Length: 396
Ligand code: HEM
Image (cartoon, rainbow, N blue to C red; front, side):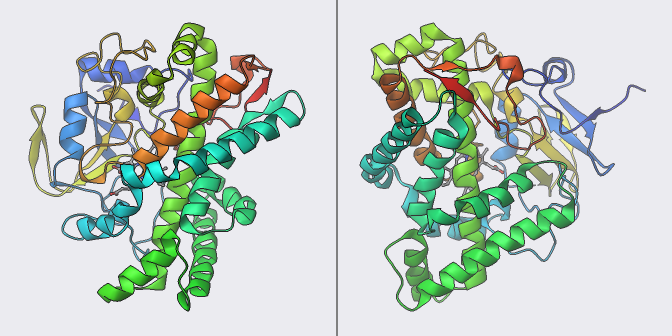
């Protein structure tokens, strides 16, 4: 018997999925793999099948369920405060709808001038700082952090506190006890912050939620703190990593960079392609099968776990021609980097806009930007469940 592939896998090249993905996708596209806790799960690797899994109610997102496939053992307690990302229908819809109105394209467009101001301010700081500078510290992290903090009504001055805890959460080797402590610390902080808003709710996302949920008679501080926590973490760590990785990719592909410089109308297409090309959230789109179902000719039984491999789907030649090439003109919008189906990323409009503004502004204002170290020496987040960069030394 051949040995099982073990998941999650580590990327060996920052610009490509683990080599085994292609082998799995081409030879045995729905296959059993081993997980860190010794259990097994199915891996689904083709674009069409990944979309089927993520879009079918027979696959549950209930990460508290004891049989849910865990990439990091002990990640969640069964008694944890639930948020939309771990809920199924019929609970999931209302929880998502409660905040959906905060993330519409229209709402995001209203934020555009402020995001532009934030990006300009951080680029001023980069240019005024030492050379080489660290792009992660000066631009990639502060931009999405400032934006989500302002949206929620969380003081940015506390960002060191929640950033330290977020880093622990995303690392795969953080012991379960420390991981738990990090979640509790940030949620506790948010619960205190929310308590301070209760008497006279301000006009920020958390304040508006207090008012809205009270009107509906469903307000609970701990539940709102959990939602705030989800938005805070999902809202900055992901986009920050996409800013850093895409900057590296643009600098390595000067002809693609020249194309967006010449025509900023292309930047949004480039953003889609970068999302596809890096797929920073990959096997984390896991599910638990709750009713027998056949996917791609394979019977998956109730009680079995499934990892929907977004990065494999996004490099599937059935969905993308020459998938390993970075091509901003390909029309990549059917990628699954934001997931698919009912849990598809709530913050995608925000993320797209932040990335668009950052690239248009950065490469226009700092045309001589270059890496201050070789790609081989960059500290990629090989040990994290969201891929990215810890630091990005640049000069100009
Ligand atoms: C480039 C940036 C981002 C990437 C690649 C990304 C990726 C993802 C993915 C793959 C999912 C699906 C998870 C699943 O199906 O289990 C997801 C869900 C989610 N994302 Fe994002 N995300 C990004 C930015 C953001 C931002 C900026 C926010 C909020 C401010 C956000 C909030 C959420 C939330 C709340 C969910 C859960 C939605 C639900 O369960 O209904 N994300 N994201």
